[in-house]
Image (cartoon, rainbow, N blue to C red; front, side, top):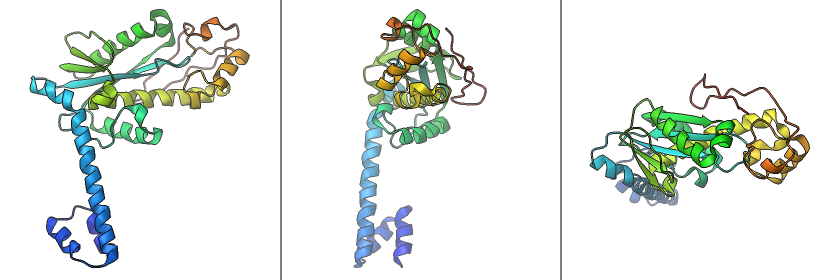
Length: 276
């Protein structure tokens, strides 16, 4: 066989007999291809083992009789501007998504790819975009609790158990379990963290076009030097959280306004308008 033919075989699913035959081939190029193949297999095996560990909480509740398990996480509790986004995701029991992890641990490009794969493979997904007015009126902790309950109750299918990242939540008859650092421990929570993060980042990128002075595309609403300077000079926008310092103590007489955005995190037609 030619080197190109061997390369094609090793990029596919070679049989044990084919691997044994190639191991006897003395050509240096063939042995290098075999080494690369074995490294890929080892890496894939380690990834499957890691992912298996991330399903340990899910397996526990499946063993106790649960049929559907949701993961819940949020993005945007800390920023000075932009909404809080909460996601709930129900994954199938036999799921495997290579590279799925806490959204903070992976690159933006990887998150985008995982986001698409999660949307394709999930049993059900719900997203809750929490308004600025709710954050300011309820405080961020309570707004997160309420938003997490709502996102669970808005799922197309009601889960038996909801694994939630570090937040005690009551949601109807759903058994809720709070896991500290859950986005690194549970595949379901990790999937929700990616959906929430990607959704919020895309909202902030749209806001960056409407309010270019604030650098929202880069800082995502956090208090960067550029962002703080823009608030002092331009004033706050309807997307700034008035209950957050230092925005709360600043002179906000000048309010920069633009038309409200329409944004669809999962499908066309989802509308969100800031309130103030």
